[in-house]
Image (cartoon, rainbow, N blue to C red; front, side, top):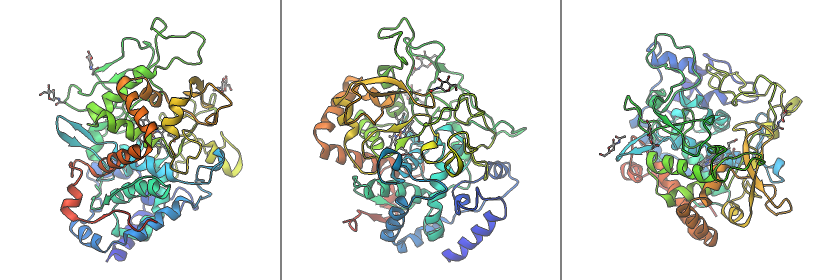
Length: 484
Ligand code: HEM
Ligand SMILES: *[C@@H]1O[C@H](CO)[C@@H](O)[C@H](O)[C@H]1NC(C)=O
Ligand SMILES: *[C@@H]1O[C@H](CO)[C@@H](O)[C@H](O)[C@H]1NC(C)=O
Ligand SMILES: *[C@@H]1O[C@H](CO)[C@@H](O)[C@H](O)[C@H]1NC(C)=O
């Protein structure tokens, strides 16, 4: 049955769009082209409906260990069409960071305001417009494209929302990190409609369609009193139409990584510094998003950011000044800049790097920041908190030109690592800093808290708002007892 349905899906998708390129064999499974999503929202197409009942019955036969092994094998199998990170940092190649970020961005849409949950990874709406066009999700189409291989292997035995959350959890576990339990049962949405209130950007031509409002604005916005008036403003949580804005900006699911810029009259402003981003003000934004909008405690916030920024790296090793990509990374190149199969979003035109590696590997630009947080980004480690406390951090620009931080001591063992302003916010706020110190002193406590917070992160959604809902309803869970 699963195979027959899969065959139907393949014909359905292959005939309607071209693949990104012949070497990215399953790209088309992971990202639905915006034109099709918008078509279905207009009611001109009938999207294929995932069968809930059948799926939950089939799950009982899912070979969880086999799924785990398929993902961990893929995680270390660097593909020429999207090479895995690691070599550029003197480490082994691994997609662990990419898969963890994928699961986080899919799940990080969960908003818990006044006890009501919206968003979350269940639905896998990241495959659809508008989420697949949010600038924060840059290059996650590649992560879904890689996982398309596993999706192809398992077909309707696994939903995209289960696959994405399980892949992130597997990435952590298979890299030596902590994971206690994982439960299956998430159902995919047929389109991205339920994500529209969280924000839309990138679509510029949607005449006469109430769903296709382009570049949502936030009529209610603010700046911190110490913040430079030319710096970006932040969207308030509550907007006049009762829409709940997901983050400080349309297109971001959480916080501005660069942090607010100090105005020249503010305390701490230093004329000669490369930049004047404020980790102290950034802490207010981290708390506003993680606590007020997402419903996390301060402890969970610190654990999640620390465990998030242990594996993987940021990507911005390319100066795009003077090229057509020069403004924000690609978000002006709409409409449909990512979801269009074959759009080759990003400077894969040879702007960065030459020949086969143009725009790939060390030439990738996702966020525009550059570098890993740890010395071994493919292996679970404790550099994030340890180095943050051990070092003084000084402002610097990435090759792309983004404001970030490096160790002041250029001889330090951590000299090759970087921090975002939002990372440093955690040692520039008394409550957060006390937790950072606790975690640096007790790695086992950090591991345990992170695993609990991660479980909550990937299990809660609008459809199943309590962390144990999936377990209670379907009971298809693993404790990873098969991992040696
Ligand atoms: C204040 C909150 C956060 C901010 C501002 C932030 C920002 C960023 C940025 C700018 C990148 C670089 C993207 C790129 O260029 O490829 C990144 C990567 C990453 N983030 Fe976060 N992040 C936050 C929280 C988290 C959390 C809570 C997690 C997971 C629990 C997480 C997991 C990751 C991972 C695994 C990567 C590496 C991706 C890769 O290796 O390709 N982040 N983050
Ligand atoms: C949450 O509840 C408080 C107190 O009842 C209310 O003032 C506030 O407007 C509510 N917020 C939202 C977004 O509904
Ligand atoms: C929201 O916006 C108003 C201005 O309309 C501002 O006074 C208020 O402080 C903002 N809320 C937050 C949480 O900053
Ligand atoms: C990028 O290149 C431009 C001109 O080509 C130069 O002015 C600028 O300083 C460079 N930026 C960085 C961060 O290296």
